[in-house]
Amino acid sequence: MYITDDGQVAGSCEAGAAIDDDDNSSMTTLGTEDQLLEQLEGWADVAPLLRTLPERERLLLYYRFVAGMPQSQIAQKLGISQMHVSRLLSRTLQTLRTAVSGVDG
Figure 1 (tube, one colour):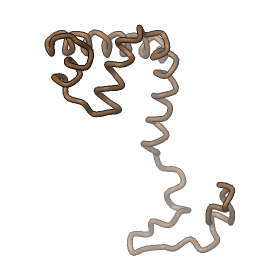
Figure 2 (figure 1 turned 90 degrees about the vertical axis):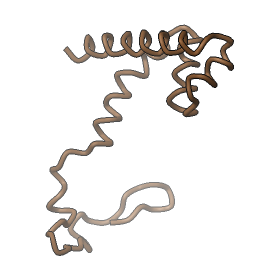
Figure 3 (figure 1 turned 120 degrees about the vertical axis):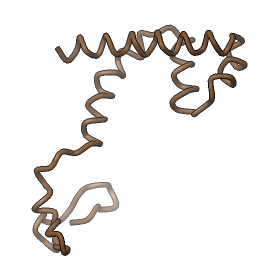
């Protein structure tokens, strides 16, 4: 199995399936849980909710989780205290958790 130049998967699952010492061929692992898939499903629930947040909270989440900025740097960038950044993060994440749990259940 391989990926073509246009991003398509080509070949059979059985063709060239190498079996290592632990018998982990592609045929024996097809039915296993895929953590990346679970993350993508989680993002599918969260993405529409992010759009509903105020711009400052979206920026806060971007700076913290995408840019990897520490709270002190976020505080400087937004012109607020680090303590306020901490409170906003907690409140925003709780809002998202509550909304996602309502989506799931």
